[in-house]
Length: 137
Length: 165
Image (cartoon, rainbow over all chains, first blue to last red; front, side, top):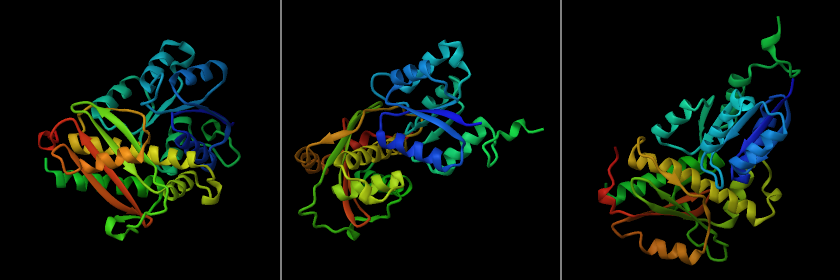
């Protein structure tokens, strides 16, 4: 099974880094969509199936918090795992994000291993053929 | 808080960010090639607001921007042809430096909003550097892969009023 990802960040270079990291991590990847702000992300989600979202917080037009709140209003997006990748350093703000139901928080700078481990935690393990081992009996 | 403390904090945070995010060897500024003549030197800056407001800015050679962009993307430096990618890398590195600097400065409970980084005129950066000895500013220099990088932070309050909670 291959997964679809959505990367939301106003930095082209961070989006590119995450795309490359996903490709190099061994995660069975189908499509990786990209968005430069929360509104673009919501538009992408409305038009495409996505298994997991990586999102920055500080973005123009619509920030990551507002994007997450909008996702929670839609039943179809409510269970979609969101991993925040941010420079945010305030414990108070990070706690608020956890209370909004994010699945993980990654502080920049990040290593490829962190991304790989988070994807495994959130989506489950997979074997070399790209099969989800969690469904192996 | 003392100005020298903030200078050292800027250096420490920037060193960690350049090494972890851009895989770039970072040392004390004495190790840098001080002569940047002939190098294109883009400057980038961002604003922040919270318990206090301020501006953080960085100037670095374009070659370093290309190198860090290549390192961050895992490609050869020759693949980074455009200045835009180099500038994007410098902007993001400043963003990460500021994001790690502010909680180290003001404590992890302080809430800041960091604006989007953008290019700034080198002359404007020069003006900021000239204020770096003022009571509400601090600057640091570092050698990143032998290139001289300067970072300056200007606060809306005197440095001595900034407390780490």
